[in-house]
Image 1 (spheres, rainbow, N blue to C red):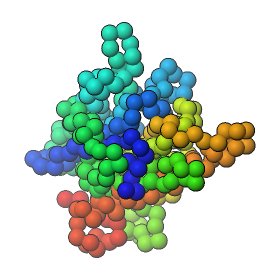
Image 2: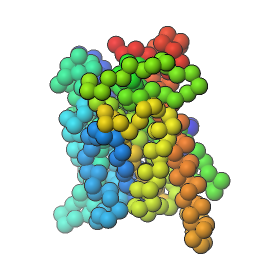
Image 3: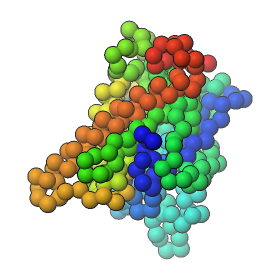
Length: 313
């Protein structure tokens, strides 16, 4: 599919509202049980939840779901809905009496873009997005463009952004996929730019590119952290500027642990990890550009606003 769901076991669910003052939504990436994960935040204006739990030095290594949402910090409430779905389905860190689902989240700034500043994702929307992901079949296609967390996304505060996805298969058979929600201050770095001098004005709200990288390779939490860090290079290759004070650029990395890497000696281990992390950066770049192109293809007639941009209503 050329999507993050090419990684076996990964499923994606979108929920959005785009009427009556709403223009926002939630995307949930649901990995198989036991998936290891970490995160790296390099933007200057992040809105995140439960990211500290993914540090390699902390107790928990498994991630039960990742929530990407609109609504800025308000939208992080949607993570509690996804957490509730996980609890009801027995997914989480085992504790006396039950489980505590590990559900990190990150949000883009889209407040007021549908006309109503108070219209932002709710816990019920997070629950519905998790349920939608669980209902998908193995290897399903992923909604792109102005869906889920990308419903109200913009780039350069002028052109439509959205959800994009891509995947790469390595020579050893491991798959690396990415899903991006592109709501960036910057514009795409391509042969033909959207506008010659993007009119970005820091101070008029915040922007963010959110990414989930997934692989079926065996990685520990520290290696997931390093892979998430390396993946930020893909954002920088796709968008200019990136990682600004007005962006909350955040990358999660999930490893399902189905395909072993060559760790026969230190050199083999280094080559395996460098190869995978380089591929992760490449696939993030592709996912970001796919998010911009898909938003235009879905939202506007081809060519109306140039190669990558459609004006926001």
